[in-house]
Image 1: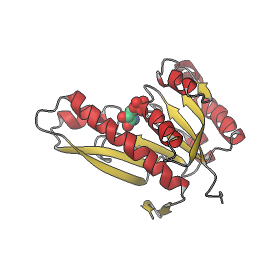
Image 2: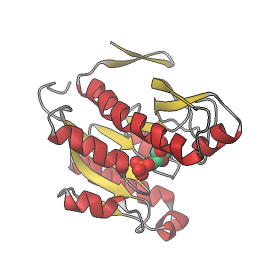
Image 3: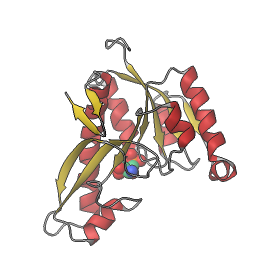
Length: 207
Ligand code: GRF
């Protein structure tokens, strides 16, 4: 059992802008979140978040699409080795556009967390904000859940509704979704750090 006074050690997995990774890092810096980002992993050398992570002095690990094409298992074995060396408690996916497989999930059972920009099980997949917008949903939102072998499934830890307002453009909705994510993800990671998230059967409960 982790001493709850010590920061939760997290690896953050990204593929793109990394704004959620930055929001988590800022929450830590501002003393709102008792955690430490020990590694930022990018699935693509073009991910803009890599430079942001490096500017913040964080360790980075970068894979290429070729690495995944050759062997996703090998990519994940490399991650697991690095995470074990760095004593990672939780793996935090923040816009990581790759499906985690057994190699990573079995090494960190119920300790891989995903962020999805819709109210799962609605609008699974890579275009969830656009899908909700085009479906004419009046309410969409965000989901933070434990990752399992099925993409965008796994026990839900937290959801927050985000309204789609009359006259919204897709960009307006994206901005509102991202603002909700940037607030909620550090908060949920804080609950993990306080050991207040518990799995009862298939359901997560926050104390
Ligand atoms: C977020 O909207 C997240 O929900 C989705 O990808 C986006 C990543 O944004 N899976 P960023 O890279 O954190 O800016």
